[in-house]
Image 1 (spheres, rainbow, N blue to C red):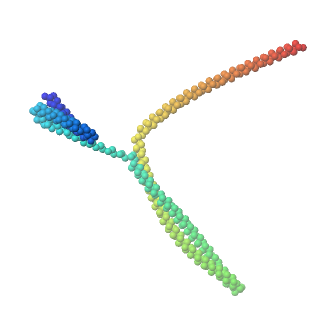
Image 2: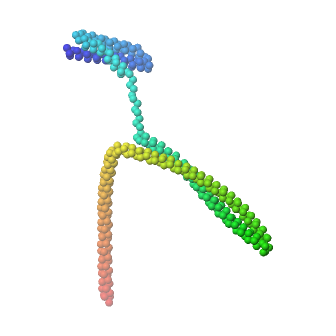
Image 3: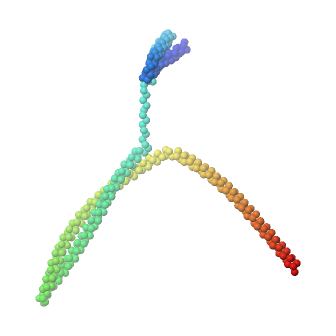
Length: 344
């Protein structure tokens, strides 16, 4: 009973699942081909109707057999009755367009730290020009202040010298006036009077100059103080920007070290492998070079031995020729002596 029930359920499932899918597939294929091939429309529509008939008959037959077999079991009958709806849902699920989630791009490593460093660098760079300008302005103000001080010193010295000259001229004029009753020195008195008057005028001008110079010095000193304050403010801003940059660079350095630590092992292994390969290649190269040197030495040694053998052979030949020549000369000399004796 159970075996027949399972067989019938399998038959029903296969028939129900197959029939709608075939109808849907045929319908889609026929719809798409309808736009391209108009000549086959009639045949395709007929095939579609025929497939639908076959699928429907197979489904009804299977359902009828199942209902008759499982009549004593109401729960099973209900399950069999509800079963044909499942393939439709499955078909709808298959035909629904699938939406793939778009991959989210991962943030670049150290992007935030690098952005902070870039911002800090920009702030530090921007803080340098005001410092340069403030230094230039302070230098100019300092030069102006020093010039003003020197101007005051020069004016005060000139006024003091004129005051001394005026006192001296007044003393001489007083003496000349006291001696006037004794001698006729009216001309000298007139000259000294003019000198005193002229010196007094010059002293008055010199004192005005001293006043103007002191006013200029006070103004220059105030301006110098303002420029110094501006310079200190600009330098403070620059120092703060430099600290912020150093802090950002330190954070970037720490983050970089952490990032590098993650790949340190692999990098080390790769480096060791590369080193081993380089050492192996180096040893092989040295071995080849050593073999080449030994071969070259052997060739040079053989060449030297050959040259030496040639030289030795040449020496022997030369020696033999000399000895033969000596023997010939000696024999000739003896023969000559014998001939000379015979002639006597």
